[in-house]
Length: 202
Length: 311
Image (cartoon, one colour):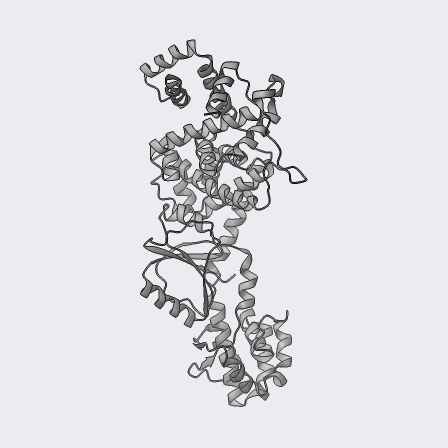
């Protein structure tokens, strides 16, 4: 039995110190996933708390058939999805205060390397781009690229075949890159831009 | 271009480190002569690198998480001793039955001192609430005053002719509930110096609407229940059960959290109708729960019943 599962068994008996070992092992990764999912540090902190609280409440549902990480990530994804559904009613994406849609930068005409942003701004841009993906594309990217789960683990979490995870992930990454290029946040050599243009023009 | 398409797939797989040696060599050869694919791989790595950065945990978050769990632990201990929703209602009914018995026996004169004493010195809040419901306004149980002892002083005038009032107000409700010999009721009759006698059948006129509205803040976590306990199984729908004097047999409880108990029932029309009838006869309000955020499959073999627990 792995060390984690021993902690889990002890936590099931009400030992909070054992559960704290689980919290310590996963809190940064859960927070990172929640942060990429919500785009807000405050919301991510709240959701991370919620994840571990829910995990504590449902310790009895953990039967050891999956890994602790898969179990925790499943809880996290459920909470993040619930959160984004609630948020969806409050947020109008890509609209300014007057409600008119903001145009995406046309990188084919006016791309400039200076537009590539650094640090926090780049992170925010990445967040915006993630927000423009479909839910199913965003999920595979978050689980694979943010949480570092294997195809098999992602497949188990999302009830998908490994092959489907792989192809969906490829489509999701291309879409994400395409959005970032349109927004002017990835610097590409001209050949790459040309190829992108050709692909978009069919 | 066809080769570039194939190379793009290899780029993605190289990111996941799933390439064979041959594929890696094929990729390397192609990238040497194709800046577009080289840029594609660089972009993929750049974005994956950004996504894979693990941010620092905000200060104090670990402590907040553990403090929340400690609080939960303390409340859970209380929770295990807290009666489920149907218990206090049963106690209320028993207390109401006891009051009926007292009214019928004509022993009101001697009753009131003892009754008041019983409630103030050791009577449970449930019993006090029930006495108020019985004595003042049967149709509005929400108007429970803070002190049960004060209620006793109002009893004589309010209780006079109450039997008629009860019968009248009970008629439209149509719920008949056998009052169980609950502890609170027994204590009340013994304190009042009455013979306990056999439990009477009373017409329930308690309106559970207010109580349900109070508990309305918490929502059942159907998505979490399905994914965490039922391992992603498909369900045909979900019913929310609220109120009621006592909970009839629904099946094996699958999960319980602070506010709800979760059951799974076979999606069989005849069986469901019988269960719904039974629940409604027990005074429960059963409604289809549509706000679960879960996609149901009408052809699935099972449905979920969620019972809102008494808080």
